[in-house]
Length: 106
Image (cartoon, rainbow, N blue to C red; front, side, top):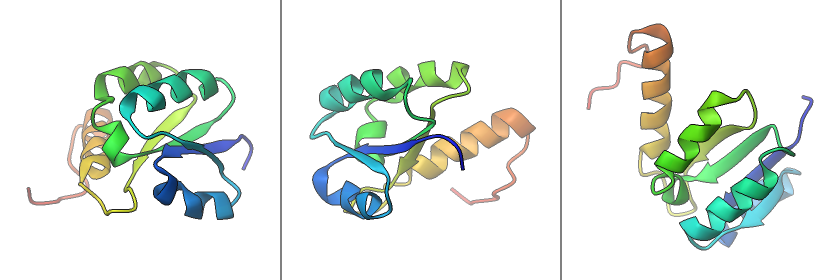
């Protein structure tokens, strides 16, 4: 795969990504995460962002939808999934395809 990958999240959540060779950026809150995302957006093709930071940054993250890169992917934090990443993916697929292909009962 061409292009660099990064993850932004709390220290515990990003460690497994570091072991896989993904660039890691620790952020203890959404303010720090926003600052990091602004700095790395042009350098990385895929940026993973833990759900606990992605949820409060929802409006800010919409600006990345207008460009092909970086692709921002919400992933569960070390404490487990809040379902936010799934909901974002489901909504994007429904917008693109016009139907719910995941068929999850809410």
